[in-house]
Length: 340
Image 1: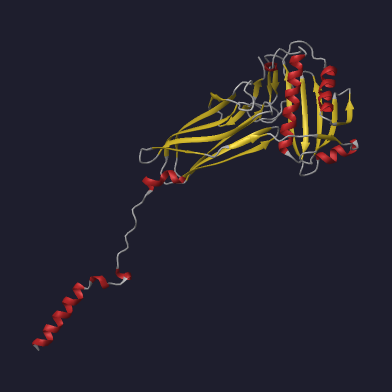
Image 2 (image 1 turned 90 degrees about the vertical axis):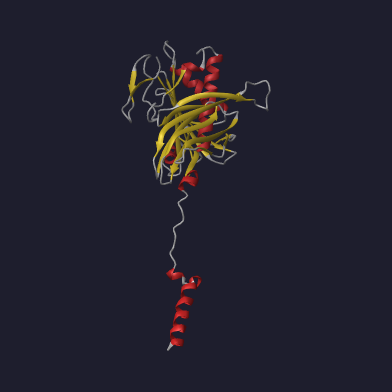
């Protein structure tokens, strides 16, 4: 009887010390300590793109906070070349600065390439939220190259300042070479109605007090297109509208150009399946027109050329209003003064 009791005590003791043999199902699972305070910046991201938008470019930046905590004191900087003009932005509250210029290595005699910077600040970006920024950029000329790049700084949930940036987007306008192409005027409407055809409009106002000679300016803008080897399809001297057609030998795309002069307003409509080509062509037409108007003494500087795009939505304004008068946008209904 004593031996049996002794064996039982030894067995109980043996079971007590064999704790390393407890099965996994009996073990207590410990959750790992959250690392949100360490890696929050890994959950902050920027998605960006540069795409044609009518006769301009749209630079879009999406800032996303996928963490469980907000970030604060958010400061966004977007750098872009000086050959772009900032037409408008969403949100509209921003600061536009000029940066130190970088020297153009291809031509030491030319002025240095100016850089511009847009600065936006937000008090916070809440958890699991995002902020969209859109810059609408109008090319001023084509003979340069540059880059667009974005930077963001913020304070994370551990009160550390963090910074992230995007890769630079190189900007270089593709060359074009137009070959004349004849199509019947009856096919113009069919060309414009093709689903893959993109359209872009550039409309400018001539800011001079004297009466504009519509015929003179109409003949002049037609001459610019003929210089670029476009084929005249039709011309209406009464309404001051003309139609030109051609094929770009570089891309192989057909292009339709419609010109019109009405009062102090001059307008070009371009249509093609290649949206980048439309931007290059329209920019070229306007820069050549401005340069020749200055050379001929019709205007003193390009500051007398006004872009007739709504400052709020980008819609083309119906006409160029007299000096100091406002005009209502047909699309968003906002009133604005084009020139003072």
